[in-house]
Image (cartoon, rainbow, N blue to C red; front, side, top):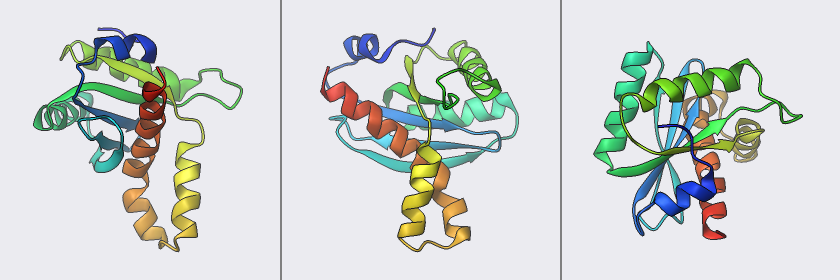
Length: 154
């Protein structure tokens, strides 16, 4: 299955069902989960990256555990909107993942998501260690919430 634009994904979704937000990093994969009404994104988990097969199995297991109907994947675009090596790696990961499961997914522009989350954690006086522990799943929640807010307006 190929990436679906968010507008097209909306038409494929059942009236109720959870979505998982994915912040795909080089060392970790941050995950967030929506409620079944798709109103609120909550940080879920962080998967330590190992190899594609293990990373994919962990991600698909979380999706199955929560009966997810689709994925929202952060696409790390450059500030000028172009795609660099990280965006290409994200697309490759999802292309390979889609061969393993027919779960629909859409990309969501994740520019500055980690920076926004880090700023908020600093404002909350979170220690550096605490920020490192939660930033990936909170970035996934930030990505997913952006997509949920957009879905409400479609």
